[in-house]
Image (cartoon, rainbow, N blue to C red; front, side, top):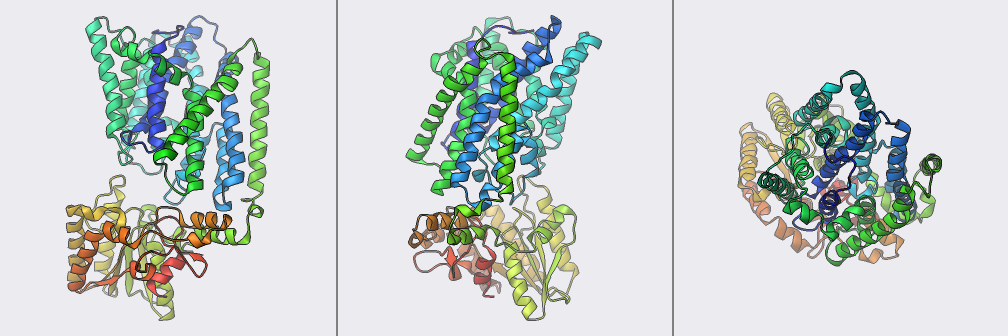
Length: 617
C-alpha cells in the first residue's frame, strides 16, 4: 500500500486545490467556471485515505466496523449537524412558504445520508432551483457515506476469499462504474450526477492507489512530469469547463486522473513542495467545514438580495465562509476528533441524539406546511405567484420525453392550431386555449423543456430535443386541419447571436409556410434579473412595493436587437408577431405585476396572469 499511515502535508494542500475552485465557482468568480470539479478531487482523496486505513487494518486482521464508523462519525457528524441546524433556523427566518417546504425534506435526507437520492428525485426543470436549496451540497457527503457502507465489507470479503485478486476486483468494479458514467453522460435525469453507481469509480481511483495497484514512479524527472501533468489537468478542468459541459462522464477523467497523479507522484517534487506550503495546508485543514458552510451562506445571501453574488457582496460572503469554517474547525471538528476528550461511546450517543433531533425538527417543519402564519396576507398572495402556472403543465409539458400523447386544449372539437415551443410556450398555450374555448376552437400543445421549435436544433444536453422537433413538424404536416402554428421559446437567451441557429429557424419558418400554415411567432419575453414572485414578496415584507419595477426596456431592446430585426424581416414575409414587450413594457420599464398579480412565476417564464395579458385573453 502507498502512503498508508503517515501524514502528508501535500494532501492537505490538495484539499485546498479541491475546495477553493468549488467556493469561487459558487461565488461566481471569473476564471473558475469549472470549479465544480473540486468535488471529484475530494472523492479521489477520500478513496485514497480511507482505503489506506481499511486495507492496512484488514491486512493486520484488526479491522473493526464499529471503530471505522466511530472515526467516520467523529469526522462527519458534529460539523454537519451544526450546519443543518443552522440552515433550518435560517430558512424559518428567511424563506417564503413555497420555498421553505423543500428545506426540511433535504435536511431529513442529509441527516440520513440520503440527500443525493432526494435531490435526484427532486430534479427537473421546475423542481426548484439550486438558489433555494441550501443543503444541495450535501449530496456529495451522501455519496461518500453510501460508498463506505459497502466498501469495507467488500475488502473484508476479498481478504478472506480472494486476497491475491484484490486490486483486480476493485479495478474491475471501477471500470464498470466508469463505463456506466460514460454511457449515461447525456442523461438529464440527474442519475449520473447524483448517484453512487456512476460516481464510485472516482473513489475507486483513489482506492486503487492506496492498494498499490499502480507501480511507483522511481525516476525524479518522471515524478515531476506526472505531478505537473496532474496539476495542469485539474487546472484545465477548473478553467475551461463550464455549466454547459456535459459532466460527469468522460469529462470527469481529467480532474480525477489529475488528482490521482498528484496523490501518486507529488511527494518529493516541486509540486509537492508547492502543495505543502502553509497557506495551502491551512486551507486544506478547514476544507470540510469550508465546504459545509460556504454554500448555505451563498444561497441565503442571494435569496435575501434577489441577485447573484457580485463585487463586494461576493468578497464578504467568501470571507464569512472562511470565518465560519475556521470557527467550525476549531470549536467543533477538532474537539470531537480527539478521542481523549470524547470517548467512542459519547460519539455514538451524540450521533444518535443529533440525528434524532434533526429528524424530529425536520418532520415538525414538514407538518407545518410552509408555516404561512409568519407572513402578512399580501406577502403570501404575491409569493403564491410561483404557483400561477398552467393547470395542464404537468400533464401536457414534455409529453414527447415521457412517450405520452400531446394535449388538446380548448373546446372539444378538432384542433385547428398548434403551439410548438419550449417551456415558455406552456402558459401561452393555456392562455390561447382560453380564447379558443370561448370561440369554440381547440389547439394542440407540443412543448419540450429547453428545446426551441427549430428543426435541426441539437440541444447540448438532450438528444431528445431534435427528435421532439421532428415529431412536431411531422404531426403538423400530417394534419391538414392545423391552419395556424404558434412558435414560442426563450428567444431572449442569446441564441440569435448564433448565425447557424438563425438559419435553422428561418428554414423552419419557410418549411411551415411551404406547408400552407400560418406562422405566428410569440416574441421575446423580457427576462428579469430576479425571481419575480419572491422579489415582490420581499418588497411587500419590507413595505417597499413602490419599488416593484422590472428590467429597463432599453436593456431588453439592446439584448434582443438582432432578434427583433429578424422578426421584422419575417413579418414582411407574412409571419404574424405577438410581441410581449408591447404589452409588458412602457417607454422605460417592463412590468412585473398587474392587478396585484405577478406576471412571472420565476425570472423569465410568464405566469398565467402574464400570458393572458400578452395574448389579450
